[in-house]
Length: 102
Image (cartoon, rainbow, N blue to C red; front, top):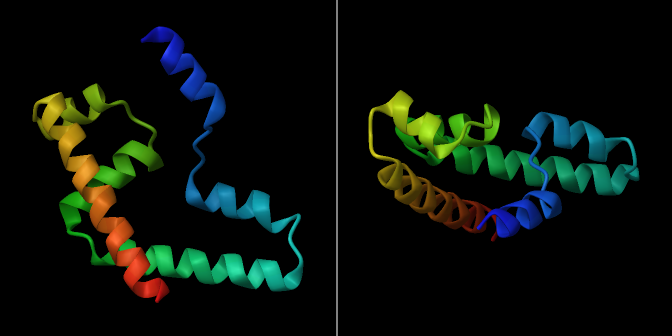
């Protein structure tokens, strides 16, 4: 499990959306920058369609980079429940994003 975790951690680096946008923006052509801006707008609109609880969960996990155990403590729920909630939330977010994309 530890080896898998370290491999996964090494392959993926999480950044807050604003920070990621700023990093990408410096190396993009004006056209590509406009495309990225549209993607972020679509993502933001999809996020706004989520419930307040779902938005809070996304913020805690990816905005504040908290572990599941920390989120579970804050929300006073079991860690397994938090994991399931996040999975469902991300699935719902993907659905909303893809609807906006069409």
